[in-house]
Amino acid sequence: MGQVLEKTHYVLQVGSKGRVVLPAEVRAALGVGEGERLLLTLESDGTVSLKPMRKVVEEVYGLYKDLVPPGVSLVEELIRERREEARREELE
Image 1 (cartoon, rainbow, N blue to C red):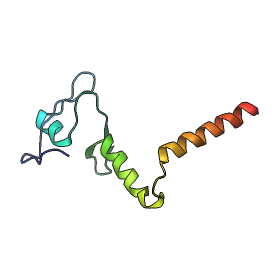
Image 2 (cartoon, rainbow, N blue to C red):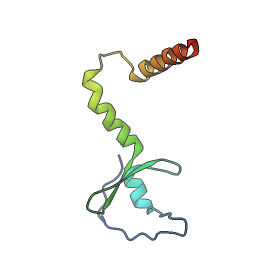
Image 3 (cartoon, rainbow, N blue to C red):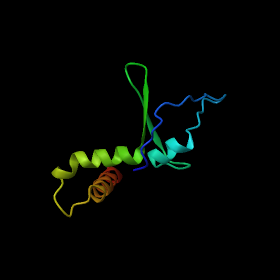
Image 4 (cartoon, rainbow, N blue to C red):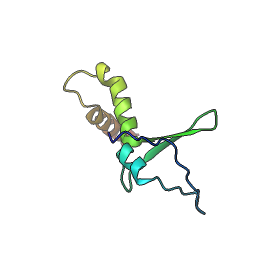
């Protein structure tokens, strides 16, 4: 994904619109650039974690990869199902 950081703690300041700036070395380690989406998780102990959405999607696909037969695209299946559903709704 990115590089391993030696420094693991950073002090960030919240701006007037609630924005924080991730240091360049953190962005590099996460492999994210401008405009990329991150998932912020608020943990029960009051801490937060950040994960690139790309990584979240990879993890979700990984959970289901053994359930999908080779050569089957989940995306194509979803699109096909949505089109069928839309056709049924048009007929009602």
